[in-house]
Length: 415
Image (cartoon, rainbow, N blue to C red):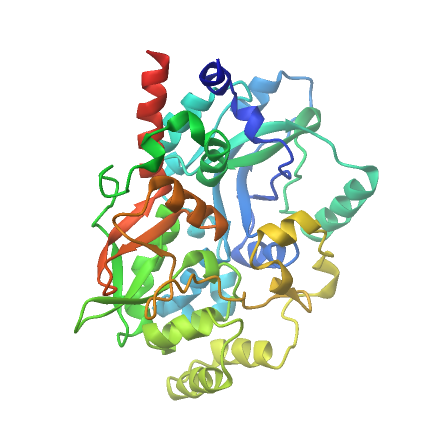
């Protein structure tokens, strides 16, 4: 009976309490995206291609014909874009590019689904490659919040309304949402959930790495790939092959766009310290400034100096007050440091220092599936590194591989 109730759940059940998406029109620029990201209490923006025809149309025809979410972006997309050789020389010019330059070519990563889509169907879509499911939800906006949105829309004409035709809003359903939901019924997956990740065969040896002493810029491609795959880049010691730490998009998403200067000038090890210490050390900041001067990167130097002196880079009228709930504050390791003077500040390190040398979220081959699930959810990441006792890297366990195990278990329930 309990298994039947689990199988009867729909994707709408995963949307309870989730906030509506913050959205931006495909006609916007990278600068618009940067401005909005700095003014909202979220790390991601949904990008929409819309033809706003407010005539009376059905819910389904509106989604299909008039408005479509075609991707998502975050600060990491902007940082990586500005870190490219041509853009680091003229960041202001790069910011005037269309926001479409930030979008992944992988159209499968974002999928529209109906509220009645079953939990099993949602898991299948994620296993097939969908990173975010876009689900319609009923509009619950207050008149006050609508007035605030209207004011912001007047300032940024390319900022698409969060509420679409007929009062429809949308939310994300992510891999983490599904894993968290399954964890609440983990007893139904006994004894599978107690098996080790090694015995279940879900440790992937295909990982992204960079040497501790290598230029951080050499990892730019790996950072962009890890963002799409929702993983991370392992920082290793080539001599011993040991895991020293990571360059994580989950942490980088809470940085300022001037982290592009750090990627362009620092080693991988120094970049790790820059983004994962609750704020870059002063000596690292001085090093970035000196190297920008050496390379005559005046445009990025001006941006970097403006950041370090605390001068806002966006007009204050675009800022919006934080409204995070106390529950969100408890759930997110970044909430207390996410905003400072209307700017993104460096997050406090979320690294689980489980071992003496590896500053990353790690487990061992013998760790149970449920233990790894809890570990990842606690630290708000969708992966866990697998290491040996000596800190040598075995591989990585991802949410998507966990879902394959649960999907097989659900199949047995169905049959």
